[in-house]
Length: 126
Image (cartoon, rainbow, N blue to C red; front, side, top):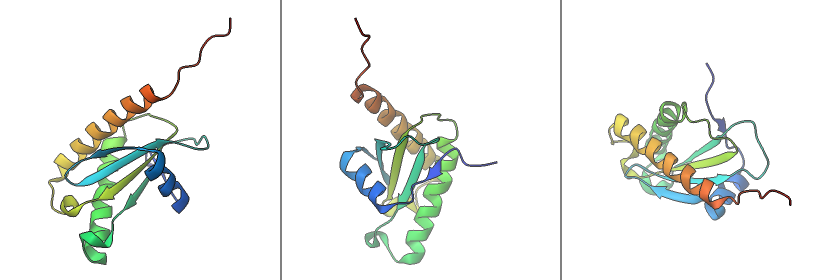
């Protein structure tokens, strides 16, 4: 069984989401989300952890936990043409996993609502 989301591979995509996207903070991570520049077949997600949260072992653990939370929380969401970036915070390695997945689900739903309000609705031609 494959993932419900694809990988966000390019640094330029991370920077675009950070510059143009909507942010939602939680205790374990910061979620940034923006509509995709080019239409893709599925939602794309990227993960990052800065050196501020710890050494390489801790950063990798935080990113693994965020990937697992994304697998659990985003599998039911069918939102298309969205790029997401999850930025790990200090508590990403210690926060209860079920709370992390709940936080991700709620934050993603809030952001999807905001993105749908932000996009102009097409008007019918007279």
